[in-house]
Each structure stands twice: as C-alpha cells, then as structure tokens.
Image (cartoon, rainbow, N blue to C red; front, side):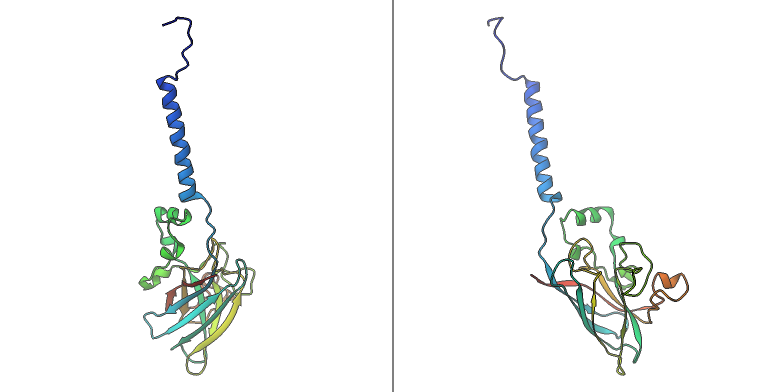
Length: 222
C-alpha cells in the first residue's frame, strides 16, 4: 500500500455515527407524525346525552355547534323531577381521575377524549366536580366568574318535566376544552348561582344531590 495514499473510506466509527444519526432522525420523524403532530379534527356539529341515575329522573339533551368557537345550542327534555322547581344543570368532568399515562395518551391524540373522560362506573358520583379548566368560582351562565360547566338551572312544569332550550358561548364541542366525553349532571336541588354566601356556593351552587347524569357522545360531524 502506498504510504502517501489518502484513505478516503469511512472508518467503522464514522459509519456508526452516520447510522446512529439516521436512526435518530427517522425515529424523530416517526414520533412527530404519529404522536405529536397536531391533528386537524373533523368539526363536531352535534352531540347527545341520555340521562339516568339512582332516581327516577330520565331525559335526553342535545348539543349543536355550527362552527369552532361558535356558541353551542342546548335543547333537552327531562322528566320525573319535582314539579314547578328549578334544578341545577351542569357539565362535570372526570379528568382528574385519569392516571398520568392516560393523560399523556389523551393529549398526544393516541385515543380520543370521548373514550377516556366519561366515567359512570360508580353512578353519577364518578363524574367528579364541575368542568372548571380556568379554576374559577362557581357562578351563573351569564357571569364572567363561572365554571365552563355552569349552565344554571332548568325549570320544571306542573308535571315535573323540564323542556328547555338555551345557548352558551363558553362550552364547545370542539377544541382542547371540548365537552365531548364529559358528563351532564342534573341535581336534586336549585343552583344558587354562587350567591349563597358560603364556600359551598362558590363550588357547587348548593345544588344538592345528583339526580341523573350521562356521558356526552358525538352524533354528527360536519
């Protein structure tokens, strides 16, 4: 071999570095595309919940939203409530019951919120507290200080049936704060809308027990 000839062939160390670099690059691309790349979810335009519980209260509520960020229309009929009364009507969340792995899976979009959030394994008590991602005090639907899940009261007729339609600008069927997979709760008492003058009023509105609940599910995409 000519002692003055330059060896242009890569060494074993160089090959290892190149192979390792390529492996890291392709692994990063794979992880980004499968787990971390933002996914443009289809627009959810309609959702429904069927309510039941330990009491005789039953009902169905539908939610419609025509555009992301737009208001949500809520329409429902709930039976077997106390006649001529107001009853607390909220959206609750079970997110706090997720373990760290489930939370990671949710936010990396391996599975959808609707497959992880709704939990009624122990009846309505499993639904957790009011949906309150901004950590605010409980209030009326029209108040600046309110939980996202604060939808006020529904009113019953002389037969104990509440037929209602309302519109809310804070809840959504789309985006990171979607109510899909969360739980609608009808309470046994009247929501004082945070004006009860005590600590519990600022948490629950003193709305009493949980008469009926159900998990919100998607029924229609745009």
